[in-house]
Image 1 (tube, rainbow, N blue to C red):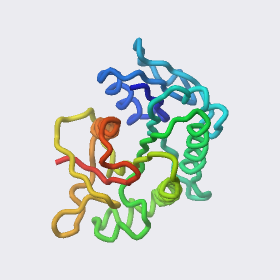
Image 2: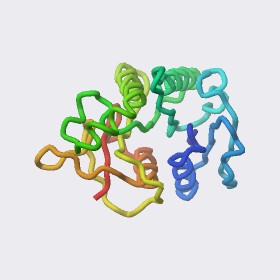
Image 3: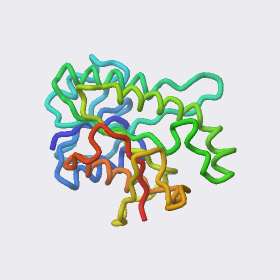
Length: 219
């Protein structure tokens, strides 16, 4: 397939680009700083664009089969985070202009402010409050996508991200804000970035999670 990747210079994005090329996809890496992506491949095109501008994105989305986003934005204690919603609005408008209708994006477990009550003490009272500005904007972006009728979207929600390559481990999935065990408690708390990329790419040939948000982790 021909895919455009947003956030291709990030740690998860680089894993996704590498795996996509291994699988034979033609990749257009849409980045803010091309110098950060050192990978070269005959099926890789690295382009610079403004992720908040639909006019900047349009020429790079034209002719693509799908857009995959691994964009991430830093936490903010003083101001609300808006990068997720702003970039998604620009991406969807650009996609509409060039007739691309499939997007796969990643957020996180616990984006809903009420969804972390069963998490561990450390996560519930220390980690989640610290990253809540990011989670809130992810949640806003998820709700924005849910109101979109003409785009076939999927939101992938991983837990904590480890800087590790992909594995062959089986995925556990749940249409919710985390993956629960039989008692409703979270199954683990981390996953490798390589496995997140592997799951996102698997959705290119799998319609099971179309227009849905899926929490993932590996066994």
